[in-house]
Length: 515
Image (cartoon, rainbow, N blue to C red; front, side, top):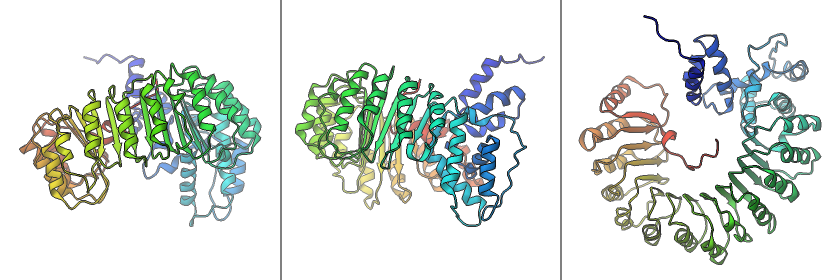
């Protein structure tokens, strides 16, 4: 009896589901012509995020898509000492791979070109390096019509005014734009690019701007913000002591107050920042402060009048006074489902504030420091959270800390994620699990580079303490396991535990702006 053939739409949906599993997708190329045709666009939508050891080979694929002029330019630069490589201009690829690009990150492209040059020369030799980069960029700008995610340093990328007009007119599908202004900018091509973004890119969902200089006129940014149909997320980076610019940008965000859901501040100095306009962003649900400094408690007091109800609040390594954190948690905590306090010393007043003001909290993310007051764990036990993410960034020499932490886990905990430094002593992890008797725990997730010792600890925990564990999250899921490791993995799986990638469970920022 022959099997019913799946409709093409179903096959495409299956392949699309596998878009982040590059190993499986590569195998799908060889099933038949249709599968190959549908798989290639998925593989080349975001080829620069491939972290395999041969990832630089994507550069050869890009070269295959060069036109005759670009090939001639590259040959003149590379077909001589110290490079001596052959490029065949007659060879035509099966697919126009560059046209499938959806994710273009100028920083990653430069990194790949650097790696590629290092592979084709006996020494790292950077003769004509900037010209080589320009050739690749011009090719991408000329051919790409499907870009959805663009991270760009304009001063490195934009050289040809005519190409810029073509490029921006092809960016109507853009969903994410990050602009890195890392040099003094006084370039008509960059201003032309920003005007084009404002004119053609009207459906950006997330906009990120990184400032290391302030030479771009405010009007360009305000025009881009104001013209968006449905801006969902905004991020500002590397902003330091310019009194008016960020305040003006925040005021223009009011044009997007009914759609804007996420705000991120990274490396921002708040000394001169006012939250007067910020509190009117009525739809805001996600707020992230990463490595921020400056500002007084008086500046933050206006947040008590905020019109928004946050779902997620993140503090990552701020240098603020603890009173500012306590104040923000007090007035923004009632609606929170996730609170992240990374690289912050957890104190009793801080954990008390969480207990009092964050009654709807589901997920708590904290850093455990070696000098933590062990009394805080008795407060931790009273939280009603279901997910706990623990970071260990230091060397530890107190095993009682881990025993105490394990004995005071909240009773409702179903998911534990561990983020260790590479030098972390697994003995402490072993003691933690041996003293963990929470049968509600369904998921353990760890970024520790898996070895035989780690697998023994996990298996021992399952067999002695918790046969209800359902999921184990690990890094390097596709590593080459040795025989002993495979035996232990099979035993763990035989206990009904599914092995998944660490990053499928742990997400630093939950907000997903892509629709």
